[in-house]
Length: 414
Image (cartoon, rainbow, N blue to C red; front, side, top):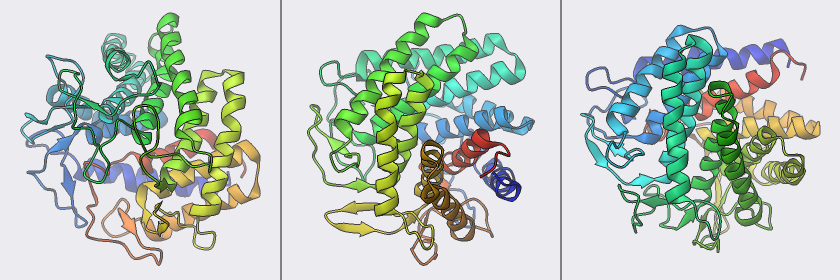
């Protein structure tokens, strides 16, 4: 990667994204993180807080601490870990509440598997950071044990042994529920692409970091790897549709109940699938996943990418294309096109990830108040009715895309 491009990514991460959330996200009075922050950086002190937001902060700053010699990043991870374990952890039933009030009492106590997956993802990263940076073996063991306990709970209660994959939600005590949907924008369904994608992501991170914290626990790692491989195969045989897109909402038997195309999830899945297969190191699985990853990226490039501006589009529902540039779609397109370029050497993908970064730096970044705008229209005008941050927008997608590219390349030429 040429030096200027590399430095542009590093500067965005270390001088905008990470400092922004350190400054504005923490509720130092009540603890935890503010559930909503507007575009003038005013925090809503009354908004409830979700496990997703808290876990994403824990993951992001743990990952940043492993990448950079900056003590404040691990301090932020410590803060997020305290909130996770003292506000969200269900001491009676295991797992984590979906959301809590600012005082730390449960708000929505059901076990939304999407949220449980993010907790697993974050705990595995934090355990590795503690091991590598502080050499705190006892503490890192405790944290990794929590991640492994989550793996056991998900395998026991959320995995569908008959049809494969993971169901959407359960009650507080891990019993069936009819309250399934992830958010008000989602459909009540037995299974979703989104939940299964992020269980796969969590298991990949758990598998990767287990060897750092517990190098001797080969049998445990084998169990995680087997579950991960099964989910990768479910993803490419059940969730993946003949048109090269992921379906979004499903019945328990994987029959589809929608016609939505989510370009952001497609391009995100293209690189997360390859990451999972590559981490497992199974040559047969890698040979199955590689063409899927490349095809998904190519279809996203052809159908969801504006090759003139570099903007990446949102969805296609009932034949209607939403061309809004959502922050996380841009971040995942940056990752996904870079990954596809690494796999193929294609100049189209190389030009695509550079154009996406150009769009991000010119239009998505809020140069006045920090971080990135939630949504920008195809002409580059931000939607200021959407929050700057909170329960669904943290230092996750945009911090991750920067860290992923920096980690993969260093100063390699591209």
